[in-house]
Image (cartoon, rainbow, N blue to C red; front, side, top):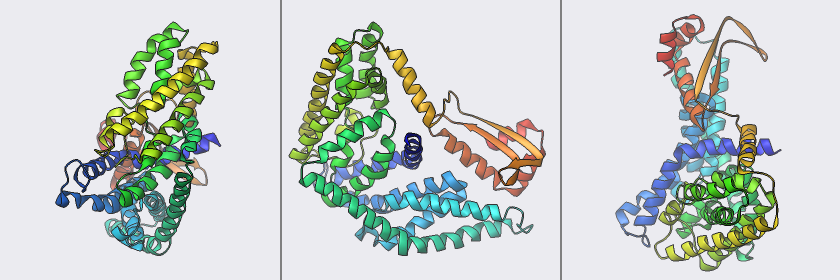
Length: 430
């Protein structure tokens, strides 16, 4: 169950994270140029809706499609999501970020299956014609499906989720989300929650209200800061105590929240501290009407405040400090009253094992290729080329894209199956 959620979160993250720069650009344009922004400018503010309703969904759909079906998958994914966007009324409807997360991979899967079907049926000399028309025709059909089915369906889902959040806000229950968020972060499940739910709802709220508290729920650096400060002040293990100041800088200024996960894992009861700290911060943000204009990525204090409305900077800073203070007090009590025998090194080992379960331990991005000209059994089919890929972070996506791009060329594909020219292989795949 946990590994399944991790893989799902990783899949969502792989669609969103390569495009996070576009989200940040959109956030800056929103924060700076809308009527209540830092530098109001009506003309420049007009960029905002086009980025939200068109650019961001298309980028996500392209990335999702490319993950499944290579460059052709990316192109058809971009085509497909336009059907969703038109189906909900364009800028008059809801942002189709969730629709993009569905249509991109689905369209990529469609073109991948088509390419597989045509593998040994492609008439010689018609490769380019069939490849181009297949993307166009299938893209049109999937876009029509998006217009009539997927777009309205995603609108309904987003409406339900948004209504659920509104209920939590009206009944002052939103802070309880921290009970799930903080443990999810330590278990590396946060991407499934953050990119699958918070980001689409946040974008919808920014469209109507100019800001969203959803961007603050997971990215707040305060809870983790309190944990690290408590270990710096009261840790009994010298190595742990000495490592805390560096971790504080990396976490608070660099936005790398993973740095504090080992400190929680070495004494799991400490998870209570960031949970309560975040509950207090979300309560404060809810009562004071705080929100961010775009996602704070990475979750550093710098990015957090950069996305803050100019009239809410002080209130948001107070919320971060509240989270840090509450987390510090609770973590301090736990650390001083418990005698854990787990060292920071052992906890880091635990964290490495957990990450390895989700992705595998990769120290260097690399690729290997095996040739089987006569073919070997691969499920119900025969494989003549077998690629092994190890990628740090999301670098495996670039490798997959390069391989897919090379093998789109039938001549290159045939040569790749039998050639012993290592230099040619390296040049082709680089």
